[in-house]
Amino acid sequence: MKKIVKIGSLILLFTLSSLCVQAQMEREKATIVEPVTTFSTPGLMAQGTTRQLAAGNLNVTIMHSFGIATRNTVRNFFGFDNVQNVRLGMDVGLTDRWSVGIGRSSQFNVVDLRSKLALLQQKTDGSMPLSLSLKGDLGVITQENNRPIEDDISTMVSAIFARKVNDSISLQLSPIYGYFSRAPQGGHNNLFSVGLGSEIRLSNRYSLIVEYFPVIGNKNNGTQNAFTLGLNIETGGHVFQLFFTSTEWHLEQYVLASNSEQFWAGDFRFGFNVNRIFDLW
Amino acid sequence: MSIKHRHITLIFLIAIGILFLPIASEAQSFKTESGHVEFESSVPLHSFTGTSNKLVGRISLADSTVDFYLDLHTLDTGIDKRDNDMLETLNAKKYPFAEFYGKLISDFNPDTTSQQQVTVKGKFTLHNVSKKVSIDGTFQKSAEGLTVKASWIINMKDYNIRPPGILFYRVSEEINISINALLPKEN
Image 1 (tube, rainbow over the protein chains, first blue to last red):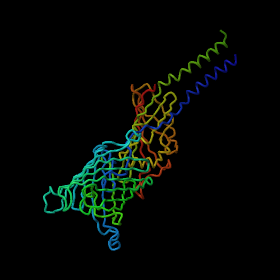
Image 2 (image 1 turned 45 degrees about the vertical axis):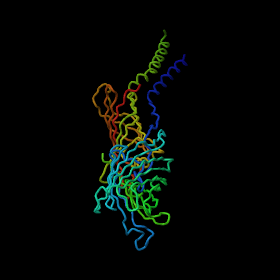
Image 3 (image 1 turned 60 degrees about the vertical axis):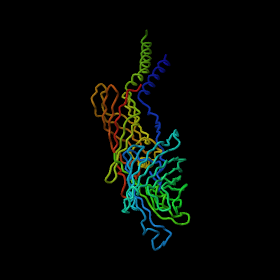
Image 4 (image 1 turned 90 degrees about the vertical axis):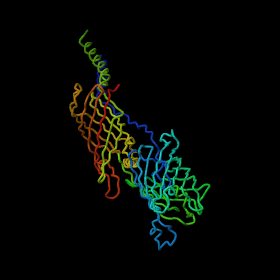
């Protein structure tokens, strides 16, 4: 009889104690499927990337290139005495997939309007293996040159295919078509290239960037394939891009049309871009 | 029936009756996986917010437990790069959750639908550091469930977090956190 009473009391105690302690929920990680961040910035040195600005983000860019570092090195202080080209620009994300921008280059005072649209975005869960963006740029020379404005127009369209291969390496391939309303003497109105680019992450803050513009088919006289090797430095709110490059241009169509320097022959210049993103809305 | 037999029968009846009580108390449990959480942080001349709608929470009125957690990867500050910096600062890869587990220590009348001031006490854990906290907020019961609102301030230093930044341009150590969640009755 006593045993039965004990068992009954134990059941009572156990039940009461189980009521008093509510176990903590098991912590479960959320399933997040989002676009892969293929590149640190919306552009390498001159080539656009598949990195899109989020809706409401404003990216202010200041792009510089200096004189050839290896000519009159000391007298020109590694080319820093000759500022070859500066492009001030801003791009705004209208949606998470579509951005528009405007910029002005000091070379020929080219003012350009541009836009980039993400058609495909590589996803974190692997459901989309690559990113594809379309980019267009319309440039107008505003420097006085006694020519009608229709002779000063250039355009560029590119399809940018990119994939972040692993945590360290991103690769891109971008067929680029450039058009100039007035070709230079001995030059061509239509130019084509298959741009290659890569970002290799060294740490959370540093990454190497490489871009190459092999011009395919028609080439303007003296044109060399432009090459850039640079370093991205990501700080709290900025991404600084320091690079050595053969071209002084930051617009794709002009890189195809007028790069006369050979990087691997030692004809390279120093340059740097500053990217600062602001949250507008 | 003898008195002894009556006692035994009574104990068993109570035990069996209490065994069914958890089912009754389930009706007093509320749970959500889509609560809203927001934090506000500031840097010199500028402030920004991060939000998530993936706050998981469970409140049991039967035993007054309050249990909330958030996967930090679901926070969105509006700028990808800032999100990545934040996750890196919080070492979210290793410590993915911010969590609170504690008890409701103030009175709450579940029979009214008016908003009531409440206080919960427990441990808030972030960056693998747990601190005892007391948080004031409101509970409001309705046909849809239990609405919880609360806000409090944490200091990153208390959680061994070094505010990100460069030289004097650093994120403020104090972070304002607020939550707003409707917890439907748990099935």
